[in-house]
Length: 121
Image (cartoon, rainbow, N blue to C red; front, side):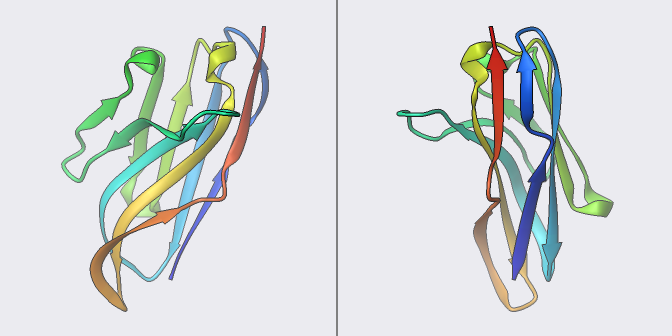
């Protein structure tokens, strides 16, 4: 099927930067949407940013002008550049992919295992 592997999380001081990566592998045929979500302790998982098939991007208001989502279609890899990090950005970050595969022509959602981002004040 589809495997998503995230990397790039870690501990950073407020004002610092991190770059998350999400590498997708498997029998992917077509990708519709790729996105980053996050879940802080005691809170619901929320959409942080997403990139659509036509390369349009959307961001949650709290990260606009600080985070940038991008992707390398040739590598099936998505990135999240996070600048000016704040303690409230602390969460587990998950990547999500909506795609069809060689054995399933219906778009399905696939999730990565998550990577911890901790921003200290």
